[in-house]
Length: 173
Image (tube, rainbow, N blue to C red; front, top):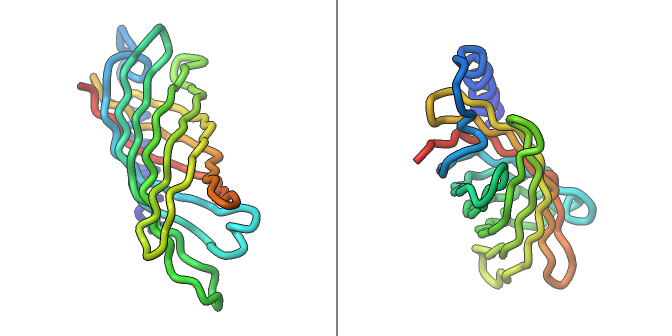
């Protein structure tokens, strides 16, 4: 998994370095669909049980105002327990809606709300809230590489929290 992340980061760097000047920035305009790799680093009590999460996501973006995009995100995350603890892997399907505002040409901040559906036996659904920041780099006429960081919390009879990283490629529609 680390090699995959490193390879994607290197490919993104070389793609960014070959960007041509464009009349409009595809990061800020037009609808797009992104597919991304997700990495989650649990904190607090959740971090005492699970060491890391990984998975993937699909994200739809649609402009709703100048520099403001509507977001719809769905994916899958799998958390692996700390060594020696009697817990199984924890799978979750997060589904979120939110907004992203471009603060500068490629830099954004935003937030999402939604639900996390557990996939294991006796799993429950939790409420999600997620503030995030990131950057989108144009790499093609309608394509961007998206690197985002977020704080995500799931509330249901307690709160599970983690710091999340997402590396994605967005296809313009």
